[in-house]
Image 1: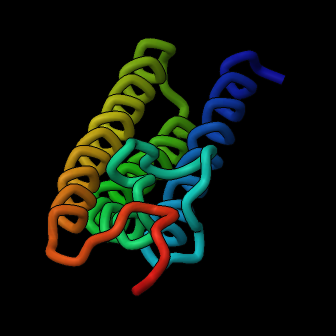
Image 2: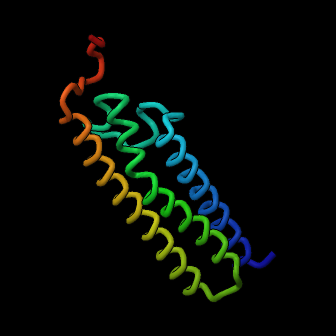
Length: 131
């Protein structure tokens, strides 16, 4: 088997797997299906402060995070096209850059949404009983 094909196949699997995981996580966290945890999602003091802040952050971050996942999926497909190694590098760097950029943007706007929820009248930090 051609070394280039092996390289492209591995890179494709990694990017497609990453893209699927990011898309699923964005959707699950925004819907409340993925609850606050220490492993996946936007984990900052403001997003972890309450379930409401967690969901608000992920609802706001859903679109840019989904776009990040779609870029990863597209990169995983494009890298399968036969091209020189420099082309593979350009595609991978572009795809990874888009993935990182959109995820970071989603996290930023998500944290802003969580902070807004926590500042709202009647907001309670995690662990405080309902009145």
